[in-house]
Length: 196
Image 1 (tube, rainbow, N blue to C red):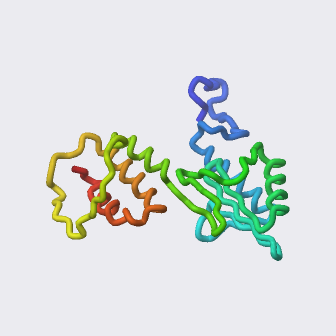
Image 2: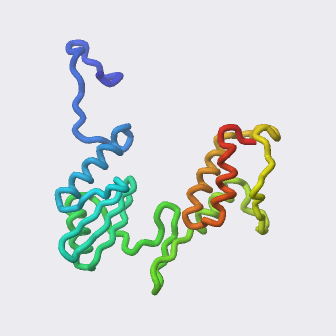
Image 3: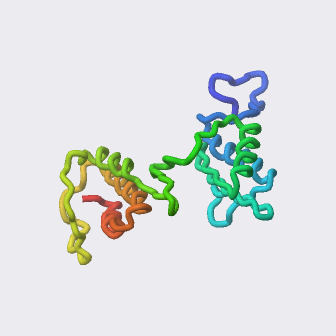
């Protein structure tokens, strides 16, 4: 269909051809992913079977992993030379900049240590507390009852069910680095359909 305001009455059957997708379009994320993935496959990366946003490069002893999330990329390689070559090739093909070592990605803080990487979601937790209007609450140990006796109909419905669901989803993401709260979060998620 012709876009509203740009109808050509002399040629009502004509349509516009999109030469370049933009951020505001519904199909932009798919077009970006397709373009980026096509390029990676052309230079020797393969798409991981378990995760379509993970690409793996293997040539002899050279190995590189590239994780793509929208327009953020984590890249690691078996050697600094290979890493430099891949970054250079990506910068030649796409407009991008190297932000250096990984420090923060998708709500996770990353610290390099002698024995590996330390992942933390401390700032993410602080943000969740602020969203829930609980930033000034005092911490305390709260063991979870493994045999809850809460009925699905106890209490009045919450004022904003979408806020409850959003916070429950945020807590689910937090369990990546805090598996100790997984059971409590699962109990909260049991009531997502009708939170009270």
